[in-house]
Length: 221
Image (cartoon, rainbow, N blue to C red; front, side, top):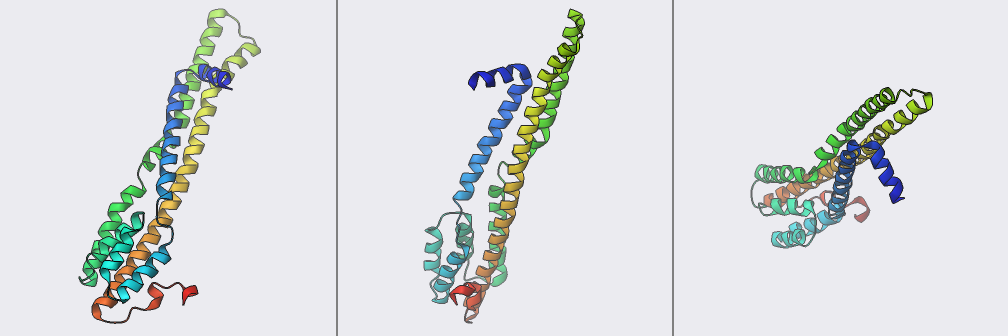
């Protein structure tokens, strides 16, 4: 298998080295992003339920400790809002919006690289193919041998880089769209949770009872 890989790399020429580097970059970013999302808090409703109970009992410090004991970005965002829990609703909402914007960059980290690789990989492969075909015809001109078999062999080797470029691009596009979809879903979830926390703190500060539908899932009522 290793010998076959080396053979393909040699057939593709220098462009195959570039495509190999691009593919390694894609794999590294995919692994990093998968690990990142695996470290995010997965039970948003459960977290809001715990925070709602603490806020209802006038224990903001207890709610902050709950956020500190959970991993991920959402607990950090909600903690940011809880530390401003005594302010008015507008100030709390603004604080949560700032925290959300700051963490959005972390969600999209390195995705631009995958998107760029998805765009340029086919062109890198195509460039290798064009150079390979030029070389093949130059060899034919020098040797004076232009039989179909000789032409086919040269073109076949040249097309290796196009195929490799398309494979790298397809993988990059698949994961780019997957992570974009994941980011959109997670970002919307964080926005909803932040708004629910702002509502709970508003009711708490006005002395009104907190509606249970803000933090209690229907199944728990």
